[in-house]
Length: 283
Image (cartoon, rainbow, N blue to C red):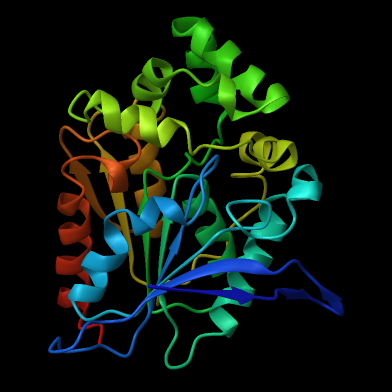
């Protein structure tokens, strides 16, 4: 496992240096030329992929890169986190892709990261894209309203975390929001300690910007959408609408919480993706 940095550029401006975790295929594995770029969701960083997915995908022959978007993990920009929106996160993804040799990558985005990937695809190519538990086309408004009504304490706690920091996040609340009942309490507690604030501007974008203007959907980019069967944030119908927009391969994985890559059965979505990529002939 290697950690490097990428420097995003937007026009003539140089953005913050980004933490970029890399995993190369191991010896003896039939390697592929196409890299896989893993884009994390809100409140976390590249570490969420390193826990299981990076080593596993490298073991299947893929070079794997997982950046931490600006203000997340060990990337620069924490002092200006609230100035970063989805557009800036797309610039970060572009900067990372520009450092990669070889063909256009496979892009994998989770939740907020899936929105970043979709916005990236409006202007840039990719070999394929996988959207895991993507934010619905209508944005976060429906999910937020449901949380306010059904889980007012959870809604209040997320607000407190944004104001005072992640130390106020309760592990039980985190489980009910993003994990299934299958994840052991010790794992939930350890993962909860790693979450962080998210950009207020990015949260605003996710509420109002997810479907704010027509998307240029490139039919040449194959897309897979993976839904979590026990997702407490987004409804299956909302996730399916994203798949319909892209005419995507759609899979719903039973028993999985929203944070699929961290669940005990994390290999199920990974294998669903790998099987789909093999069917496409991605090399």
